[in-house]
Structures are given as structure tokens and as C-alpha cells.
Amino acid sequence: MIKRITIFEMGGCCSTSLMNTDSYTELQRLDSYADFLKTKDIELIRVNVAMKPDLLAQIPNIDDYLDEKGIEVFPLTIIENKVVKDKSYPTQEELAVWTGIEFSNNQ
Image 1 (cartoon, rainbow, N blue to C red):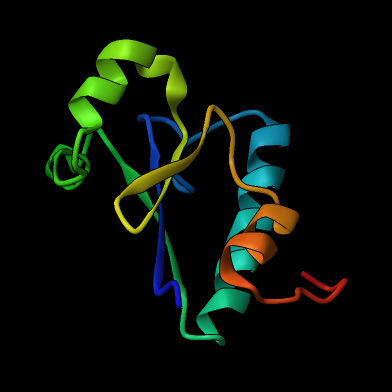
Image 2 (image 1 turned 90 degrees about the vertical axis):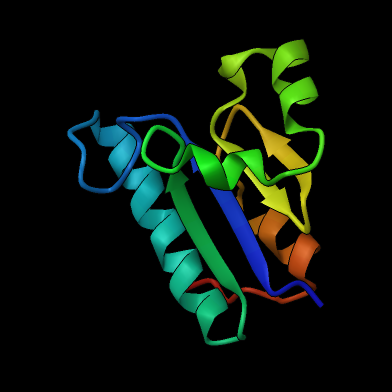
């Protein structure tokens, strides 16, 4: 069973940054998914790559991935050291598939 989903973001994407309204709403939605998953013992964390590049560097073959695709891949979603999504945040449907957990309509 998945225990952690990590989303790597470029600077300016984190919840404390100023951003456009659409991005803020999307991140609020993501935070509600994280709260729900936490009740199921699954951690969904967001990491600002600019502040913690060492965490990204721990992902096997990530340098090759970034060399091939460029920095346009962020936000980058990682599960069990594998890229499962790039260029956008995961949807509720994707999180449900990856975790095997059904979300209610309230998330």
C-alpha cells in the first residue's frame, strides 16, 4: 500500500506564495485531498524544489528524466520513487486510482 505521495514544485507554487486565483483554488483542493488521505494513513506532501533540492535528488534516475524533459515538468508527482504525473497537479480521480481509496464528493 502507498504510504506517501510527493509533489515537487518550482518556487512560487507553495501555499505561502502569491499566485493567481486559479492556482490558489487548485492548491486548496489539493490540501483537502491531503487532509483526507492523512485519515487513511497516506501522506501527500508538497516540496518546493528550490528550497529542498536534496529531496528531489534522492529519486533514482531523476537527473536523466529532467535532462530529457526539462524543468517544464513541474509540478512532478512521485510515488515510490517513480514519476506518476508531470506538468500538473494530480486530480482526485488519479489519487483514487493510485491509492485504491474512494473519495467522497466532499473532498
